[in-house]
Image (cartoon, rainbow, N blue to C red; front, side, top):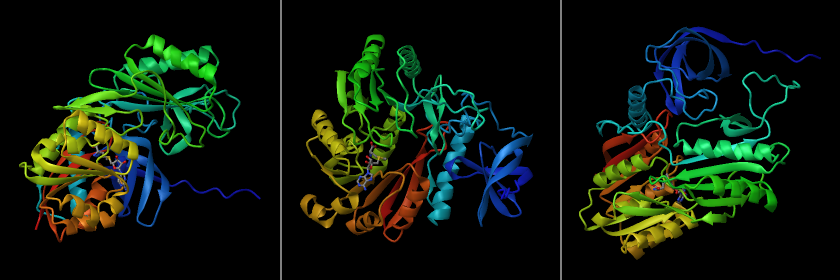
Length: 467
Ligand SMILES: C[S@@+](CC[C@H](N)C(=O)[O-])C[C@H]1O[C@@H](n2cnc3c(N)ncnc32)[C@H](O)[C@@H]1O
């Protein structure tokens, strides 16, 4: 029996009216919202419906009836395939406006909050080569734009990025413009040596092939760190690849590798084997220096990180007499950055090695009035901790995209802290959490900060004061 063919639904002449969260733009059809990727307000497009739910549809552009006057030519040839920079088709000034609007919309619609001040969004001075970290993946078969399933056409190998949402489709890239060009020189050279020596690339479905991933980091002094992930402990071939990088790239001051035999590519949890140079990079933010170990978290846009921390410090309004809690402290960077103005500091974070780094960072910077604890926030940020270190006067919180656990929100509410500075990379969860604090805290002001030009991501710093 033949399979039933679903009729393809097309909407013609859909007018794109605004930008939505997660990199989508929106139009309306039959009074229903239609989410469309890679569209700009002002476009009139024909879209193929790829998802249909009770309250919304998702469409894919198949034809432009009219291009928005807002549009600019994307500078990257992989735009709309790699998924990294969903907003390259819009000018930077418009991107900033849309990001700021997203923050306001989230607070008003999700948080139900009104009457707060919006300090204009702080754009990034660098709009290309602003990242200090990038991770590329190897694949034995590149994704190809004109690839026909089950065809006999051989697919070349790839070193590049995943197609959005597709773990087994990899786009081979010659260059990424988000990190200084040295990254491209190194990655092309690694690929060339692998081709020359016939070193295999990983097949994620069959789980075979040696080369898996490579992570690049650099600091403002243009010193580089690499972590190369191999699938097997094939020491001869590992030596071939690592010695090649060491010999040809003298700005790589920290060279490391891991052997990842897991089913997934995540480097976290793997043992890092130090090959040559130093084991960590150092980075300065203002008067402070931080060590960056191969797998530890560090803000990805260094110049904007400093400006983000400056806003955080300003919002915290420290006078030298405050007991400050820095929740989700990572390697202690915010706690240390604001330390001069605090009487005492407590930093909490669940990655143990990050807390080890935080302690080293504090010592290296002569910050002797900070203590750091590793553990899940909802367990560690507790009455017992308050008894030991005193009640907080100011809380700075910088959670991951999921926002804070409800127990953590409740604990903040009960803490009596006069001020809360909430740094967030997700306006939706930030708005939800601030809503949960409304009976105890008033949202005074927010300042969005753009850490990631050409992407839809936005960071937002919010100041809340105790009612
Ligand atoms: C957005 S990062 C902020 C890091 C740091 N504030 C900075 O600026 O570098 C969020 C941090 O929260 C940590 N984290 C995530 N979930 C956590 C939890 N349940 N308990 C404690 N820390 C957590 C992550 O490991 C990460 O370091």
